Length: 292
Image (tube, rainbow, N blue to C red):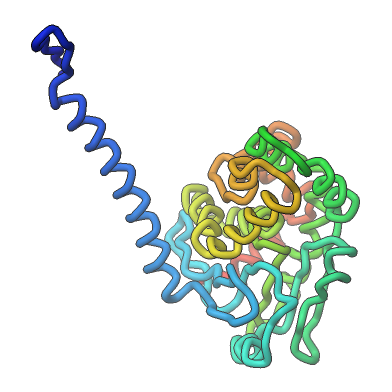
């Protein structure tokens, strides 16, 4: 309740307004703290700490709608892995990571080739990442507004989704039970985030959990993201808020992809079956492989 008090000819709004605003601010700060704390607690098992890569984490442990759980130590997602150290390679070897799915474009992968253990199977899935990336970089130079809108346009583009992720799912189907796989792009946010969301959807993980896994990049990539924002502002003359909008892993971005798939294909299931090639038998096989 707001009450206005007239005192000595001046108008004073009583403390209720101040208290209300303060409470709202404290609630917002508490929400941010609890979100960060949840990621911190989750990261104790999920995050793989490496010297030469960030946002490297296990997709295991998520609960499906029917009460099963995604198996730990089988599927990992990451940002760029071109700078792995010898110790990092030992970590990947100890985790039995024998396959790498690279979602970057041909040019990206040539400029920063993955550093891999001998014998690792490497699969490049560049569909939609080459010319699009170059055009994308040119289009954001000097951008002063519209970062959020540009991200939604990117996430709404389903043109290359099937060709990009079909080899990813095929490799997962061929993965032996004693092997693990990591998939990645540059930041581990956009192309990797969509891939992780589609995989978790196939495995039956509720969308609320899928959103949280996607948004967790804001926690795992936060330091690298600050550096990227700085580069965009200083070298590309992008407005800082635009750079932050483009570096964020916001819930509405991944929702845009799924909404677009539904509007274009009728449902996510129809897209996965008709375009990606995941029929009922293959989906059942993926669940046998990667769910407890």
